[in-house]
Amino acid sequence: MLCRIRQSSAKLIPIVARSRGRCFKPTRFLASKAATESVETKQEKGAKITEPQDAQSRGLIDTQPPRGTRDFPPEEMRLRNWLFGEFAAVSRLFGFEQWDAPVLESEELFVRKAGEEITDQLYNFEDKGQRRVTLRPELTPSLARLVLQRRNLPLPAKWFAIGQCWRYERMTRGRRREHYQWNMDIIGVSGVEAEAELLAAITLFFERLGLTPADIGIKVSSRKVLQSVMSQYGVPPELFAKVCVIVDKVEKLPREQVEKELAALGVPVATIDGVLGAMSLRSLDALEALLGPGSEAVADLRRLFSLAAGYGYADWLVFDPSVVRGLAYYTGTVFEGFDREGKLRAICGGGRYDKLLGTFGGENQPCVGFGFGDAVIVELLKEKGLLPQLPHKVDDVVFAMDEALRAEASGVAMKLRRAGRSVELVLEAKKMKWAFKHAEKCGASRLVLVGAKEWERGAVSVKDLAKFDQSEVPLDQLV
Picture 1 (tube, rainbow, N blue to C red):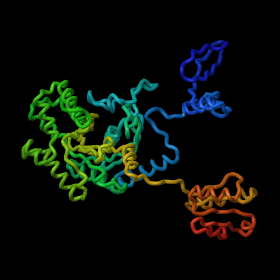
Picture 2 (picture 1 turned 180 degrees about the horizontal axis):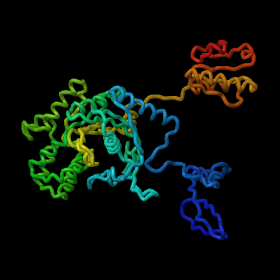
Picture 3 (picture 1 turned 45 degrees about the horizontal axis):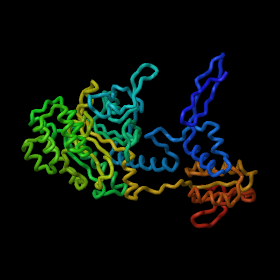
Picture 4 (picture 1 turned 30 degrees about the horizontal axis):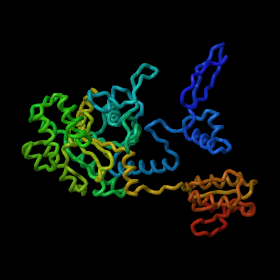
């Protein structure tokens, strides 16, 4: 006896089974929107319904990826590989070594101070062993865990990673619930020379992609600026992290909303005015006048801008004390890349986090790093017309002109592959005209024809598709 299934508005195909007189819970398959629309359109037009209806009757799953995530078909994968290749190339130009860690991490690695937005955005759950785990929302805590493993790690250490991160957050242009992130971190250098080196890597990456300081700027400040201002107004140190989270929204929220959130923390009105006034300063001289000539924050920033001039990228930098970054572990210099037209969210960001290792029970080490997502930079490159054209390409197409030579053609393809050439072997019986079109579609430079007469002479015909000439090449000379 079949189980009764309550119908819903979705088009569902129930699968029902019986075992020992009991019904299993039916499995539902949601018909894809495209298939459903195709069926409905054809029904309206009175057309004959063929494949879409068949797919629906088979219970075709929803073919879209989960909300906020992406598929990478071959054309998108070529773009991703190119971008990741640029990330890695720049990192290696600066002498960095690559690392990685599991996407699934212990939840406690990321549950830090209350009020941090990232804590509320975790994809976290309890696994089958009753352990609290999460998909990593960022890479830096995983890096800290690895560094703590390596008790005799030679310092300074310069590491980079390209990893997938997950955050359950509101989606906007360039913001998804999963993304890939390029991180570069320096462990063991206490001076701003480390920040200057990382900023040099970021600007070199931009240059390699064809971007200029007219397209992108990098806002630079220090958490010490806000600390000094709050200290002047007598704000308790325990409020500092929460104030940072709110101040980080200065350019995203109306001033009234920022004031309201600060007041909710118990920050006096005069202090709010003082903090927001300091955040509006745009020169180091004005900042020094506010904080005094002995300010450590001012000294660090002056040194950093001086180093930037030496590297040759000072025109990329903009002093902006409102940049504090939302993560609680930052302790000093902070920076954030932005597009000059203001159409996109932050392109990249980072800073100094000298006390993160200590929060995990280890010995603190001076650390600085940045995170650079893959989504926003692609949007910007699209906007600027700078995305490269990356068609599918192979070196050779090998074609058996006679089915009896299929095995021989396979051997020719392997010979070329062993020589380091990328080879598309035609696997089905096709006509010569098709082979030429296929070679053109693959962007091949040569079409290698395995014919009976040539094979008897120990050779193949090679057509150079760029020069449009054809020659017979002995097998022992084919490379």
